[in-house]
Image 1 (cartoon, rainbow, N blue to C red):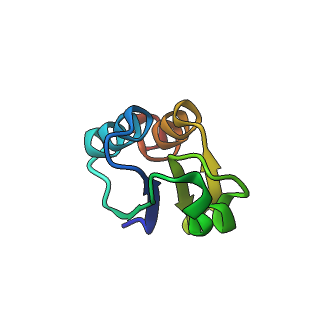
Image 2: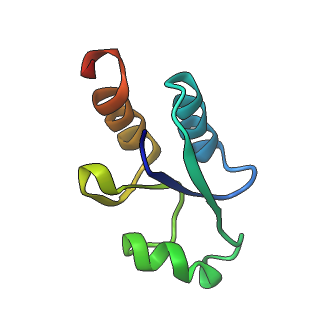
Image 3: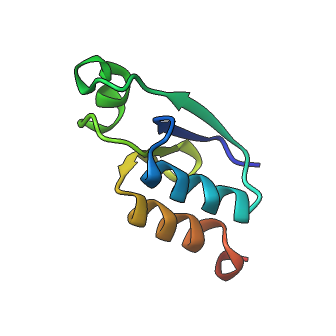
Length: 85
């Protein structure tokens, strides 16, 4: 079982894309909702060095703060999808 963490914002279409992929792959994850104001996103900035979301953390595979929804979806497919089996 994974220890995935997702930093997200409610209503964010990029976050929804990542959440859909997590659901498709039946992966459990811990959600961290971030404030809508970029100025208040200190937690996600500490993890990833930026204030945008989504951000994925996967300690099992040394992923400290991956951003960009397309990159995250590709990573999840490669790491946890059928090709990884």
